[in-house]
Image (cartoon, rainbow, N blue to C red; front, side):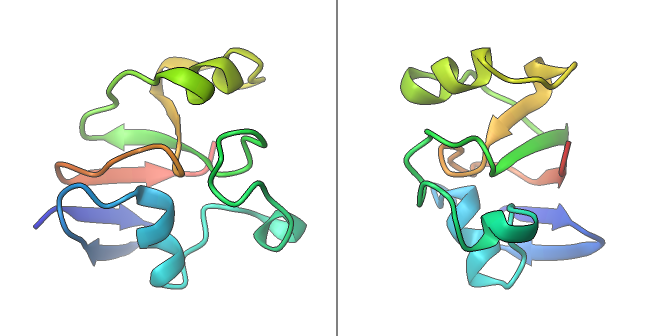
Length: 97
């Protein structure tokens, strides 16, 4: 089982789980402030669930995620993924950019 390290806590999940859902199911939202309640619901259109992969496979974004990240203001977009589109396969350490 992959382990996600986020905000000083470790969360186990099943391989193939969506990162956003794992975090939300463990009361560790990838959203900040009002975006915890107002976001696109995992459709890769708002970008508020962006996380930086500190350790682990970053992978390549595709489709809507790739388009959304192109509009990103993050300096290190190559290590940023949308949690709603990221399928967990290995241990990860993440943080909010």
